[in-house]
Amino acid sequence: MFRIRGRTYLRAFTIAAWFKSERGRKTSMKQTKRSTWVEYYRDVAFCVSMRSKDPSLQVGCVTVHPKSLRILSAGYNGFPPGTPNKDENWRKGTKDDLVVHAEANTVLLAGQADLEGSIAFVTMYPCRECAKMLIAKGVRKVYYLSLKKKYQADSTAIFKEADVEVVPIKRGEDTTLEDYGNHLIQKVSFVMQQNTTPGEPNGAYKALRDSTEELRSRDLQSPWPRELMGKILLDKWTDYFLFLALIASTRSLENPQGAILIDSKTLKISALSYNGYPRGVSNDNADDWMKLSALTNAICLRFSEGHDFIAFSTHFPKLHEVKNLAQAQVKRLYFIWPKTLEGDDEKALQIMKDSGMEVVPMDVPDLEKLGEAIKYTIGSLKEAEKGLSSDDWPSYTWTEYDLQPERHRWKPKQTPEARTCSGAHSTYRNDSI
Image (cartoon, rainbow, N blue to C red; front, side, top):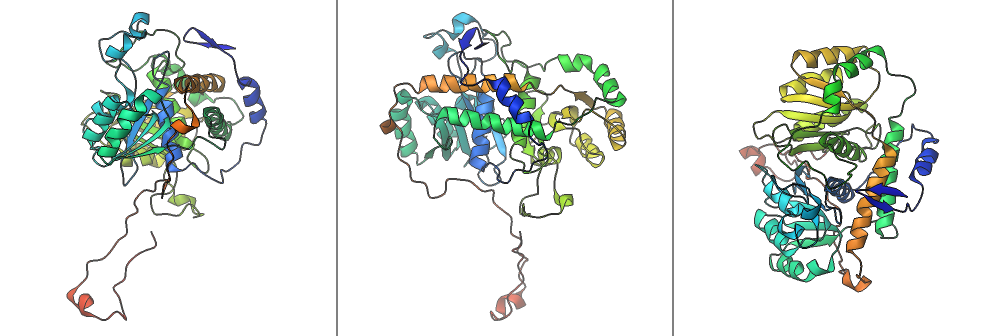
């Protein structure tokens, strides 16, 4: 059994034993199949929900750009600034007047991000008020993981009237929430295995850790309520954002890295990414020099509201990246791996320090606690689904379930001569990307 937020739960399996057996396997594996974009953002929305302090139901929502599929906004259900997370405020009959739903938070906290035509991923089917807000903001497609019967009729009617496509997300081979939760834990475990290296931290790393002890223990400041009704495993913002970076890395095929940029003032997510080839370059390409790191991908995808950024990365940046981080107004960097800094790493560290950037090494996340938090959140969704039958789930036949980012195709401007020539010699067009 384990306790979260003062409540006791039975484990469906012993998480510690499961992780122990997984760690015994070889860690230099390469994923042969990556998560689809729908699966990836399903996981991100689910992990966003794990920050919610609602003791009965944690819900997450993310919106993404319809063409590039970059993240635009994210939110979870919680109280607005000024409302304390006290026991009485979360009681049934009281919290409905206080809590802002995940979808509403995603819309309200979008800032300068344009959600027109965007795609939303939610862990719970939206209520009618949230459905109206998503539609008003321009969301044109909604993927959902779980369903609450009382939300279904009204919201479905609104979405249908507004011509918004609503798609149930695949959970796993046996379509259960348990299956989905177990698969997510396996993904996290795989990434942790890939980054586990033998040996002790070296002197440079230890010196950096000692000099940043206050930053390592101190949390980020935000306007949202800090009092907690009970225990929450992702209590700190720093833990939460590092976990999202870890989840981002699960879509990488090899040497997984993940990174997230947040606005230093508002704590809004500005970019979330992983390491891999740029858009248009085949994943079958064997040239590693063509790859982008997770951090570089993130600063290329970021949108800015004029504030500095805080970066959370699974990995320390390479020497050639640090100047770009400084130029992109990254003022603080949290990273997990490696635990040794030598050679170019020390030079990179000095460049970042000279630019005024704070560099903070963080502990490796506790796998067992993450597994418990995932199981707890799955349990709250299962509780919300009580009373549903198979007939309550919509029968949906999709023509294209997964999403793909739009790839740019370059076409040179045609000259008058090219327009008038016959089809025997057409103007060159690069279709290789």
